[in-house]
Length: 375
Image (cartoon, rainbow, N blue to C red; front, side, top):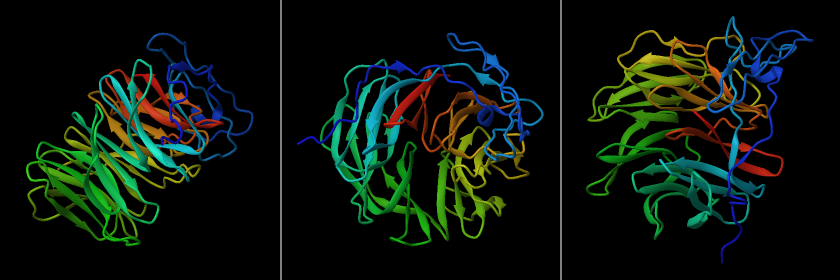
């Protein structure tokens, strides 16, 4: 029996006009009585307008872009999928024409569905799951589900539907990625452990073997065909590098604060540094050369942005800012960040980049939604 549907009105709809308020668009930690500037002119593709200054009374969650206000790209998000509050959307993935999402319910069974990005009815791909990760690898969709007792499993299913296949099991599986030779994921070494590892699944043999053993908690990793780069925490954050073939480990960055969510950016690794707890807003985005050297701050300002997972395309770096006053942002390296969408509650953890749009999960008054804006 299919329990519940996580696509309530899958035809895309546009959200009502969103006002850029002082908390989301400020130029810094202004005093009371500050004003909110114009968010730009709405239109196809949007234009850039000044976000104005903020009257925040020292609110640390103001997005600060340094000496100038954060520009705002004036696009109205549209809603592709809605899900009731008892079926939280746990993960999304996008291809050139299809959206995939999985639910993370509190008690009832969840499911994985797909639908055309242009809108229309959804298709059930898997049920009786509790989905925390999705990863699209060509015509195969990988997903992580758990049994609510500490056991996690990695499955694969064809994107066109069919029988799911168990690929691996373990403790708290997260952070999926791939290259031409294998599928990679992170996991705790055991339930309740404070150590972790990166695992590799060989495409040719389906054999599973550890790639990296980590004396702390893994907070994301990236691969580039030559090396693996991983962020981990043990009494401070560290960004490390090692050849996929093995050998010595090189430290690229250390910090008293957590380092999280590294992504490949050409010859650099971009990463988040700071506390990622919603409404603390003490994180920022940095970049460091793959070969090492001084890190460079990509998000100028003094108030932090409470950044979540990073995503890249050929031109921009994208991320979500968490908290109840969330936002979706982007930047070109060396330029001031832009705010793509404001008032996106709890949008920090999942941002997916498609061919023409950026997609994320945000909370609404009645549940979760998958939203999108043009790039």
